[in-house]
Length: 98
Image (cartoon, rainbow, N blue to C red; front, side, top):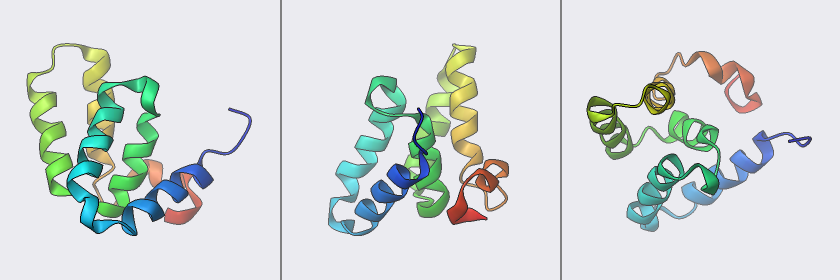
């Protein structure tokens, strides 16, 4: 955690943008990060979805949120949905979105 997170997030975003033919697999990978926190930080999905705004990711998160009972998980999912908004408050934390 002593290194800035944004360069890694940016590298992943660029990789995703450079591989549009793998969108189905990448959607699954982003959702897998949310389901399995050991695979990556939730900020990864927020960062990328703020730029990409993939509706299938947003819809899946919304459906998951609607059925989720854990308030801890619901909090994470609500934050994910906020990242799809053009006025995402946390965008100011990242150089790319300032």
